[in-house]
Length: 316
Ligand code: NCD
Image (cartoon, rainbow, N blue to C red; front, side, top):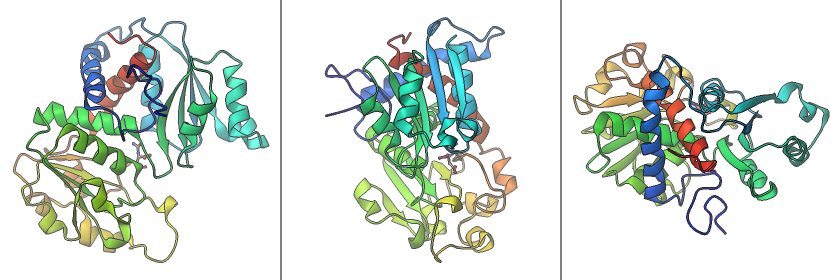
């Protein structure tokens, strides 16, 4: 059973990009585009979700994602409640589904969930009554669909189309839910080539099966690339001894100006954040003219407005 699409193909939950039809992705990008003027107005609000109650449930730390979900909900005129997991009943041993049951009893309409455990948002989506929508805001190393959607918005904004594009994703692929969601989105949307560039120790097993080409050498991997997506070393998800030190990683894979010059001259540089300067990216690149890292954040608000309003059946 497809948990996130109804029998007639409408999105009920957003849990993963995998298996999401191209048209559904385009519908989100187009709805986000229609919200962009709202985000620039003096009065940045539309009444589409007035009276709806949205719970932001973040079991893992976050700045950009949690805040932009909150702003998006407020710009749609919803009531948004941030649950501080550290000081909630979860800290007193309440189970995830008991927390959800209690918040559902407060007439929740939507849950935005980030969780360290892959699959937690799916579990919640299976459990909640049919009128409640669930959005995955990042689960373990599995998926981060709204991040991938805002990244697709960014690529379309700067490059106009996906056909013919060569995209490189660089760094800690194995722990990255962002990379997985981006790969599914880019292959669905028809990018010409998706490359992953990383040391063997930071690549998941059988990554080629996702339809990507694999490079261990960044100097080769960046040749002729239109889009470079840098990723943070997710040390909090690493165990074992195969970890490169920050200096080793920077010297082998850090995106410096010199390396950036190997890509196409109009290549854009993206990063989901948080960036670690001098580990995966040089400051001159992060703040340079090819960087679109801050526009990504701004687009994230419109994308989250789009997803919430589509799920609530209120897309413009
Ligand atoms: C990412 C995440 O949490 O998955 N950040 C984000 O949501 N913008 C990537 C990361 O933590 O490195």
